[in-house]
Length: 107
Image (tube, rainbow, N blue to C red; front, side, top):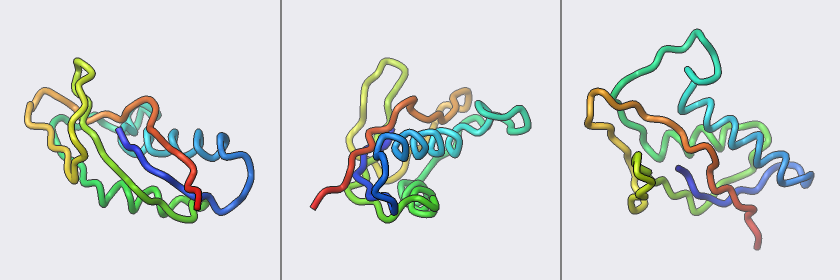
C-alpha cells in the first residue's frame, strides 16, 4: 500500500485524477488482474523508487511528495515505511492494495 501527496497538472476534480492514479498503480503492480495476457509471478520484490518513478511519469501528475510504502500481510498487519518489499515465500505473490492513500499536496 502506498501513502503519498500529489499535485496534478490540472486543477480539475482531484477525485477523478486520484481514482485514475489509484487504478494505474494497481494495474502496474498486478497487471494479471486486468488482462489475460499477463502472467502471475510468484515471489519477487518492488522498490519504492520504481513506484515513485512510475507515478511521476503519469502524464497528469506534476509531482509527488511524502511517499511511504507499506507491506500489509494477509491478516491486515501493516509494516513500517519500507524502501523495498520482498516476498520471501515462493508460493506468495505481490499484489496491490485495493485503495492507496492519495492526498492532495497543499502549500
